[in-house]
Length: 433
Image (cartoon, rainbow, N blue to C red; front, side, top):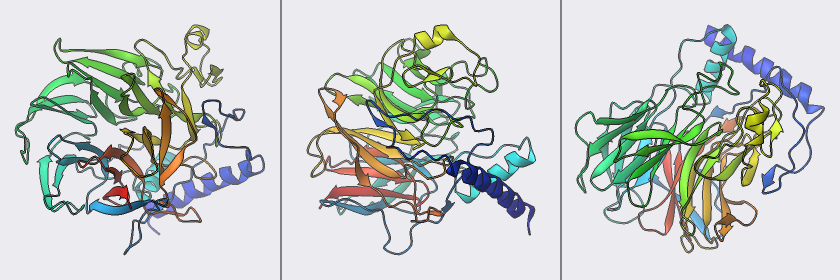
């Protein structure tokens, strides 16, 4: 038996034992979802639950499940870990292909975890590129594929402002000159902002209405500030980049891992989805969707949700007191990554609201997420229960993942939804039947 296989079995046995021990006190209540969630009391897990399905992919005609009235088909296939989608005004669809790469393990247990994550297709060799896809005949399948830009550094977020195209690499934002209809970008790009890399590595991007500022989601290095708060400076926040002044600042903080960002058009308020901390239980605390206001603080690492103190972190009552409560809970460890606004009339049976790509849990006894959901909005606020747009990404026994949804975007026709699937290596297209 290879050492890597042995290590994977060791970590599986430890994780399985932790799951078994916790099954006797499993939380049986409703999921922590909505504006007033029922969040179970925290249980400090000395050994964190580890449960990751083996990446299998889709075979034959197998595909995600869409509800009545919707149809799902492949728009683009044979990608390498597609994470994020940007639809350009001319209809070109850009897809960022990247994956975290394993650094030197600090212990045998960390090495075993890396082996397990590779089995789940959560670690690997990163393509570090953006590909461009076109569907010139309008049949719903992209016929053209071009390397829009390669040799990037874990690219994720993208934004076009006028004739400048911005890429959110893990270590900063770079700008390129862009001409409409171009198949590729040239040059190495102009650095306009820097971030600390590693840890939660994704860097989403979105521009404001007049194109003067960019907003970037920058995740924490660690779970709960494990290496000290100096290492977390400039992280666990939404950063604002002033394109005219050439400056960047923390727009809102205390957000452990804010990934997708989107504008709510009625109030022009910025919203984000946040991955909360690990090691306190299957449903504690929930990931969440929240509006993001300038200068606000949202609790990490000292507390979560409505100022519930995390006693694993050195006390800081002043920071707890200034914490803003998030708007809408999305369940424990669902790993909400993708976020976009869905205008009314885009998909049959769905009004206006936010679409969220839930990448899926890795650290709870019963897996959560692994679906694309819709949260209805009214008057600029969440107004109803989540509804599935796509499901069926997991095998019934939770041993295999056929796919894992990440980025979501309204298609160039304005009548479809595109979903990046980084295990299936497909961009799915959801349309009304």
